[in-house]
Length: 256
Length: 337
Image (cartoon, rainbow over all chains, first blue to last red):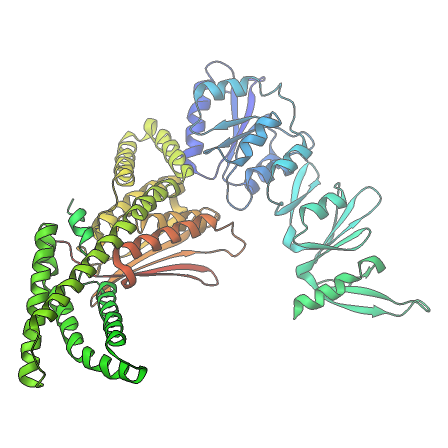
């Protein structure tokens, strides 16, 4: 029986028994206010796919999940046109909890108590939405994906597939071997987050270290020559600015 | 639960069948003969001469003693510490006198001062026993420390809370399975909180591992597959408790949990002559998370193996392309029933 005012909830947890426990508790809560279980997801990816099809008011989101953890999934979720409220769940006091306290992020510690769940859900619609910058600060590890909103859905690009990131007027172009995407992020923040995988070759361009094939000298411009970087899988060659030319040496050294 | 009692007597008196102990005895005796040679000789050239002379008499005594003590090992360990020590000292004196007599007959060595040599033998024996006594005392706090460390590092709190959560989820729908799971948890924590300085039969450890994995199976379902190869396992072999369980916990944490795809953890236990081999394998992903916890568990187990078996036990960890393997070898010491 679905109530028009029912609170729409999604459970995301990789462990089947953990999901069934929350389901039981939601049924118990349903006696005091209407709840509709929209769906369950066993991974961050499944969750994003689910919310591309259905809308939800609240996501009960497990932090430790394989492939894409809760903290990353939440960052992608916030790019939805109408992001749901997020209540994190976790089995153990990991480092994130302190940060949650600090930034007043909602969370529940597993095993979840009925009372706590009840309280959290009853104020779920009122809680201040999560802020992306707060989440980014809490997440200790860089994301494994970059999300692109597309027709109300979230499309995910594997960071390891990206060849380069280039700042445009208001967006950043994300180039994979297959195509280009535009994302609304700042290049300097991306540079900070992915400093392990990407290197800046130009004021407005980061390239993936793993995809660099080599460098070649471009002598088209009269008098002055410049270096171009060759990337695996794409024909495009990107210029290396004078200031960043030291990376060519460093790259050569790493090859030896 | 059958287990060998490694009480104060057991630990103060060395295990004479242990290769490390035998080597230590022979090395120390050799060192002493060298010192004696240097004392006796008047110049460097004479040192070698003297040493050869002393060694010809002392080494047969030392080797014979090591063999006899090895043979009498389990009998000696049943005695009280004082009686065991008296018997060993008397036996050593007797061996020395006998070897000297025999040497006098066969090699035509002069046997003028058997009394002096017997006294030297007794003194050396007492010194060696004292050394092993001090060594085991020096190591036993480390053993207690290792146990404590083990307890803290061992069961990840993450596992405890997830398991409780899994049991809670079963109570309404499948109370029978919830009961079984709680029983497994009780057994697991009983062992974790016990005094784990005693060696215990391998079959107990394997049973513990099964209980642990049953709990993980509850949470992970089809994602966790376990391949047991324990048909040729020597059930009565003695191992330090909690030698396999923490490794399996690592295997699940690093090999199974980070993936949505099902993974196989394999356990292979067998013995070749007097050595027991335990081989654990789990899937491994290069991009995987930090391995600090893993290193800590390995170091901990390696330390405990060394405390119990000295140089006779080894632990090797190997990272393959898609697989992680830990191979433990321990001497096959049988539990007494």
